[in-house]
Image (cartoon, rainbow, N blue to C red; front, side):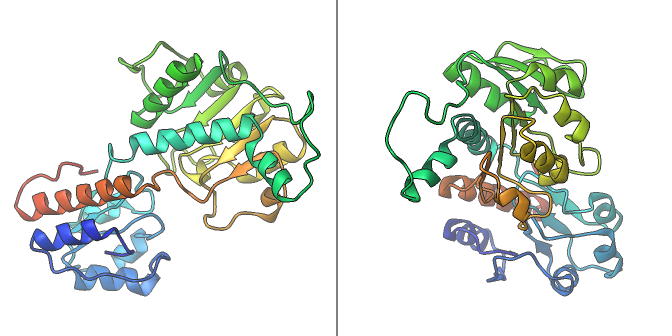
Length: 314
């Protein structure tokens, strides 16, 4: 296990018969640790930031490891094709993260549109001079249009919350038509159209080469001046430099981010802005959710070593 995990997860792995080695550090593994893990363990339970690149697999031509049971739904830190070529199965933990991540999307939507972080900073600085009718006016979410980029499990969970809680109109962009979105929703023909039609856009696509900088300067230019962008996907789905330019120029209403292009590095220019909400990757940060993720990873391991197909192979 490459990071400290909840006690319940460690206990479940040991109860399943695994001889568990726990890495105490909370930072991603070093290149040497990555190659050592492939050479010395039968399976690894890695997570975000543990960069199993093609070069790491090439450095261990005869790996002992047979499985990478990723802790998390996103696995763009693992070169899956290189893993398969090395005879290593990769799994992830979808489903367990859906509701928690959708909740963070709603948190960011409200914090950004209603200027909550900016208001809290004002109070903490002792600069608040009392209520008045035109103080810190934000964007009212009720009845507005929400654009969702990526209508998978998390996108649909966000749509349900936005429609049921705020009566929002839902538009979405997806590679294919979604048969059951759970709520009334309109599929848009292209990204520019979705951005232009939306008061708030939430990015919920998987990471990887296919979606890197999907939200670029041109996409941001399609947003109306009052619109807000929320990213709970992967940091590099948004061109961070282009977003900073748009925020500095006040060309969009604001943004809410839980992920960053070069995480955990957050540019000083971004941190200096008052029209962006910055969270430290809290998408799944609830004990029961992290336990569920870990237990799903252990289930994947158990099935694989029992000679069965892992439930969540990628």
